[in-house]
Image 1 (cartoon, rainbow, N blue to C red):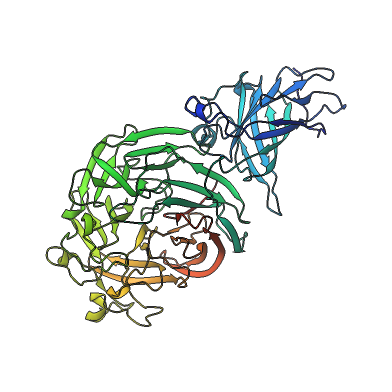
Image 2: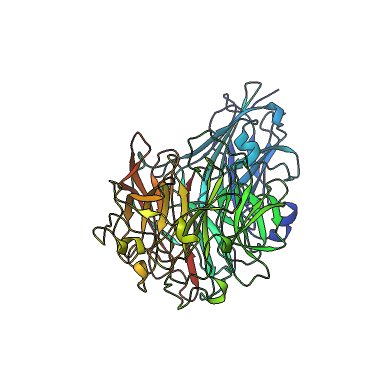
Length: 594
């Protein structure tokens, strides 16, 4: 068997394809590519196959003196599923999986950026679970090589090295072009400016942001036209995107990782699991509920769940999602639990039995009455406590609650103003570092403890994205919406609370305060980054302010207490791409490795 040896060749072929011409065939997996050019290496003696372009989107081998039995050509499909325009699949004709020992894919860095290198074997879980393309068909069978990290709206240089079990190597160099937008798209891609990036200290991966477009906001539920997700590198170049534009229109909804390492998202009544290559792996449809804001899968690496790594819930894999009950007089006040394999409804919680639907104390910057149109709670964030199999839920208009699986309320993290029995008996008492309770004015939420611009303690107002830290502390994005019941908003912050469930007290452990220009009264998120234990902060924005994404270094003490340090990554995104439309960024961002 003759192999292709690793010696750089200089012959290139050019293939030009219509990027979106075949979009109608996405259902059956027919791919669409914007273009490629490629070269193969020759034998060490200077002979061997060269790649010749064809107008059909393939790269074929012509024998210079002998064509190897393994490789008879290659095909390139950009955006193979019509949902992820910055990925491609290269089909190596004639190569079988059983022949492959290892694969390396290198996307050459541009503008001073680092090369993006992926190496795996055919049996790697990452390859099998996250990048399976066995449903794709090509003119001739071959070995499928996934390519991620292509640059948006330009040409990327890609090198593919495949080591075969017989000791030979396939070595291909390709140039692949992509298009992030489709013909006829309204402008939507933000400009990205990296203000600072300490790459030696940063969490590995790319920064992920969600961008939605919606009509002028109006209650009760604003159905977005679409939500698109982008991931950009440390230099601000967009390297991955997900466009699930065909989902039904629904409320702003986030993207989270599944336990398998894929992505969970949805809209309206539909939940999907999608791979890194944009392949939809599962679809669930709810018959009695409408989704809003948040989805988590118990046991996902995204969650932390308040326990050390390795601990596993007895409900591992189940999906929790925020929802509205169809036909009810209220909205955005339910939690449903679904079976991951079947989508079957396992449990549902009516948060009107946990919070007090008659409490209208919270002041909303957009509405005179928070109960308008039944939006008394506006649930917007979920966390799961594996330590005691409990659920933590954020309601923008009420506070944060912890509940048992039987619906029992454990505690309420909220200003004390306006509560009645039985909920008033579950309110946490705010205490200082010495355990001394603060004055009634602080407990009620009328003022902060200490300096108002950098409080020793303050309650969250209009908060989002609850997250449990490994030591059990609670991390929140405190939007500061109508802080202390005054209309308008001041600053937002990422804040850490420590809750003593025996004493029923709460203490503020640390905070990172955003400037007024960076603060947001809506959406937003913060969470712990797993590799570095740094804190990621991404306030939600609209075109009125520049959107930002920050990574803040931390110091972690022996008991797991996290203290905020300096900003080591700071990015700004310009959403003013079309002033006639209303853009929203970003309900829940991430730093993920691809």
